[in-house]
Amino acid sequence: MSKMSRRKFLKTGAKGAALVSIPAFFGANPVAAILSSAGGELTLNDYYNLFKVDETIIHKIMSIALERGGDYCDLFFQHRISNTINLEDNLVSRANTNVDLGVGIRVIKGDQTGYSYTEDLSLKSMSLAAKTAANIASGTKAVAPVELKLHETPDYYLIESPWEEVNADKKVPLLQTVNDRMMELDNRVTKVQVSFADSNTHMMVANSDGRIVFDYQPMTRMFAFCSAEQNGRREENFYRLGGRYGIEHYSDDNLNRIAKTAVDRTVTLFDAVKPEGGEMEVVLAAGEAGIILHEAIGHGMEADFNRKGESLFADKIGKKIAEDFVTIVDDGTLPNMRGTINIDDEGNDSHNTVLVENGILKSYLHDHISSKHYHVKPTGNGRRQSFRHVPIPRMTNTYMLKGPHTKEEIIGSVKKGLYAEAFTNGEVNIGPGDFTFYLKSGYLIEDGKITRPVKDVNIIGNGPQVLKDFVMVGDDPQIGEGGGTCGKNGQRAPVTDGMPTTKVSKITVGGVS
Image (cartoon, rainbow, N blue to C red; front, top):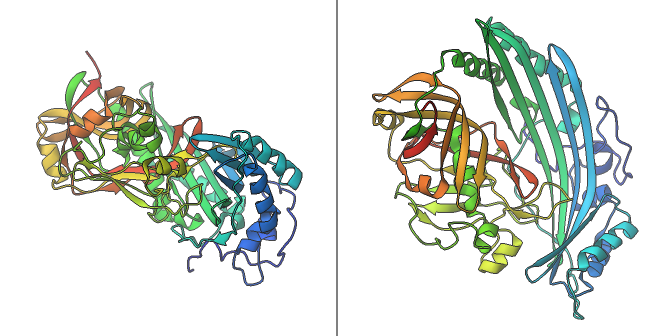
């Protein structure tokens, strides 16, 4: 089956229909009845029909929003259907569907932002929200919105089966397969929990500069949790897989890998030891360990922290902050990754932004406000949790490019240290960059070899300092295939991170004293 763009999957004949009632979890697809056109191609008119607006209404709302002297206005329309299923003890313990619909209206005056939203897309309600957002500005000169022109966007998440067309009867067997395989893999496994989530989001952004764009965004994730017992001792671990995929991504091979990785990571802990604490060399594994890159370093490169002088990178553009072989990018254009976006939530095109090139800080991650402040183009990183939230600079897929070393020589260079495979429960103080992470999966390195697994380990460090202490970078870059959800300013956004095998010359390890 060929993959489809977001514009070519709805085939029914209800063009122009009003918003239908929300079905039960096991019911039919409501969006197909709204957005379908005669040829099956989604158009701007289909999005107008979904949100019950047209260009005249949008102009009227923008004019109200700008009537008190605002410099700029944008409207963010969003319709999202999210489904979750949880399988526990061989039973579906929970199944939910959530539908979100609304518009956020933003007015900018200088460095100030007025924001309001409404779940009621009537002209009256949107007009009231526009007046509320307009209150940030005061003046007599009103800026009039210009004629809207559709901006065509690429599609970085082609899928075969849109989630609107996939009912629960096709999802539950996937969870059952993972459940059964985990129970069969090791007789020490006593409890399995498998959860599945999918969503589809239709969004439309229009601004007073005359730009209007729309996008369809699929998302899915499977999470497998494993509990095992041996000699009265219990261990737990998990594995996850996801991204902007359709159900075809859950192939038999991928289901096997989810089950096996979750079980292997769990039963390995029965042989785990608690290492000695103190400062030591740490090798960050390729892939999932990239969360350190995201949390401890990436946030400090988001432009709002630098514009306010809160980040240690605020005065470092053009300066050397790492070794020559360190290059870090934030790339929202990687096909099907969890952090990938065709456009950001301000309507700007997604980009591959080089943050650090050959050790030199080249750019921050910008939204509309910060790009105006720094007199640069937006990097496509203006993101928000939903129409209820104002956009802010956020990462997408943040990772480090390959270096000159091999994994074998990196591990072989360590006399006594730690091999960190996967982290969880991290905390970061964005300003100074101080962080603490709990190591969920890792091993000792002794005399240049990976030996015993470890548990109950925290690593403590400082992001900018760790960046300086990247002394070897491998030629094996990987992207963490499970992705994550990043929290910032009370908002959550899907992201992905990754890196090659990387040696840090020193990090404080919290273990046995």
